[in-house]
Length: 321
Image (cartoon, rainbow, N blue to C red):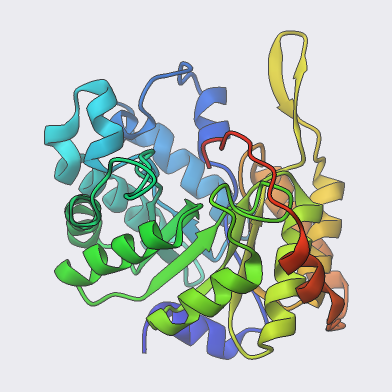
């Protein structure tokens, strides 16, 4: 049994971490610079972020490798360093997890390529598989417990990522999609459609992340849980909506807002609860406190399925997870 499976078997819910990019920008990462390079340039800063989340209560931490495919890294002429940067990302998270007093699962973050799959776009399925396999190889050698595919909008890209991961190693896989276009992904996929298509891939868990704030993720979990009450679902919402304040981008989701969200998504059926863009260890600590002090009251919302399936898609650009 994997470490993630063991924790899921012995806990009603698990607390995941929050935003990585938010923390790195606060530590000095410049807009447009590749965060993955900090795995080798500033390893102690990356470890500090992981340590902060663990101390706040995170039982799952994700590596600093969201943009670690060759497709993303080539934007910075780093496409030849995929293995190195992903391995380093995993080693840094592994070191902090191993130093923790309680069990901590290390998830190898695998984000979208940024390309559009054929036939709508130009990225061939086999090329995507190869890119994800290269990234997974580095993460696996670095010591991750789980391969964590996140912020996807295209089910076919999720399939390519899952296939690429399984071509190089037999590790548990988690997948989350981003439903940020009026209750659907950018490619028009509803939460129910995502569950129907992804649940047959033998994943360790699936759900939603990023998006337009807590209410959106709450709806995603409601819809998925109404479809199946046994599956382990993941909720990792952004800390509200980004706003410009005094020339700086700030998210309006306070720790109190995220604490309320954590309790709601747990009651709606989520088993893994964390945060995404705009969140910090302070948010995670507030979420942990709220979850521990509030009894579980599962709420099956049957109407969420119909509402999710009938919303008309509204196209919008996708932010980085």
